[in-house]
Image (tube, rainbow, N blue to C red; front, side, top):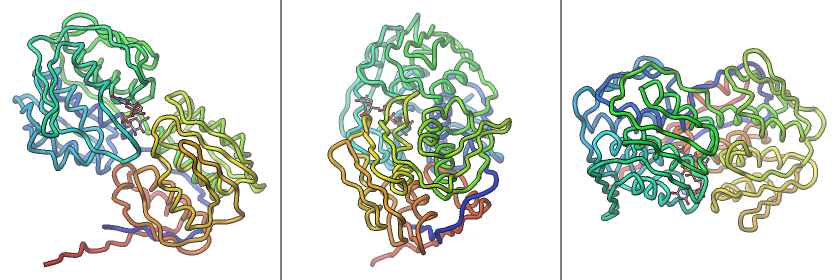
Length: 426
Ligand code: UD1
């Protein structure tokens, strides 16, 4: 159980390079098992969730090699469709649900324990199941396992009742190997959906419309290996943008894709932060004047991402006047507020709305990361706080941020990792 120890007060200045997108690569790695082939995936982030999905696939029989940020996934030999024994591994991450779509697509059968992931509210997978059933699968959930089997997979028209990133990707994974055409209506449009679709198309799939709310997939009988480079991470980019703004620094975020960041850029500018598009990425320059309070409502892409409302809360805490966050995606995503209050934040939460009154400063203390993105927010809070902040439960942060402390130190922040040995009771 590691802790981060942060000494606040240094503005972040310099350059940081963004790694591949967690939520894209966690769809792409399972997608690579859709054929008996070998694929090479570049720009794979070195994060715990990637280690976990790789570990599960290896247990299923895939051969996977890692060299630097490249993964080679070889599934020329048949792999197992049954993950029931790996509940321990699948239960620790959300994206293990992509094994359902990928195994169904390849073998017309899958047994996968229900997924885990951050506890940020009710996270049903009914839309995933609805999609698989529409494609012809019989689905049973028993003893914590999702069991699916289809004699044939046949393309279908599927309308998602809620805009879901996971369901959109999962249905794509199965539908690329179904007979005929599948249309997903009310699909999610996040950059990682486009990235998974691009990877599948390079493998021989026929997907059109990814990035819009109607995705058309014509099933193919054969797919083949390919070489692909994962898109830079939108959420990591946003996290560094906010860290630069909160510490009143000046950071060039290399490889950032401005188009993916429009909602964040607009809000930062509204608060008085300079965001400049440069050839190599996005530069964020904090303001010497007080930040201005603002309102944010989380929405599916291209709206403001739910994964960035927590880092945004730190900026709002430091801004003049009143700010408001309305969380419209997950109903339990304000658990971090108690931790911020320990640092002096003035936040009241009423259901899905957080009202934030700006305070002159935050002060360092012992806090804990309550989930992955809340953990990133705690790091930013520590960087701006007076004195020392000690963050526990940083295993959440390790799930999704590559080399976070190294990057922050390179930018001039003071952060170190303290390894606390697990207590063994006999
Ligand atoms: C994914 C991301 C997560 C991000 C979220 C929203 C991964 C591994 N995780 O999570 O980081 O915060 O998108 O951008 O990519 N819903 C249903 N039924 C379903 C599926 C979803 O009701 O079958 C609801 C959810 O409860 C939620 C909303 O739809 O209210 C959006 O969820 P979804 O986009 O599916 O999020 P995840 O795939 O879990």
